[in-house]
Length: 92
Image 1 (cartoon, rainbow, N blue to C red):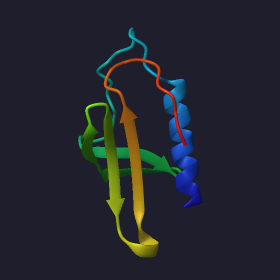
Image 2 (cartoon, rainbow, N blue to C red):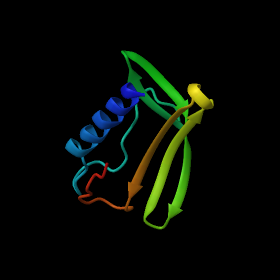
Image 3 (cartoon, helix red, strand yellow):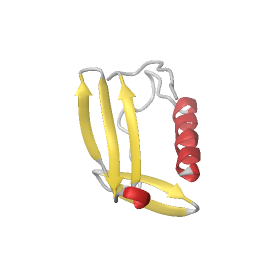
Image 4 (tube, helix red, strand yellow):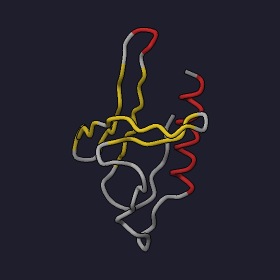
C-alpha cells in the first residue's frame, strides 16, 4: 500500500510540474499505452490496466481502476477538477 501512495504522490508532483499552458499541445500522444488503459511504471515494470472514465458532475471527472477484494484489493483513482486549461490546486 505504501508503494501505491508513493507512486500516486509522484504522479501528482509530475502532473503539477508538467501542467499544460494554453500554448501547449492539447492532443498529447501516450506512446505505447493503449486506449482505455491507465499506464505507469511500478518497480521498473510497465503496467497497463483497464481504466474506467466516470463523470461525477460537470466539473469533476474520475479515471479509475479496481481489481480484487479484501487484502488483495488494488485501486487507482485520479480525479480531474475542471475541464479546460488552467491552474488547478492539488489536495491530499
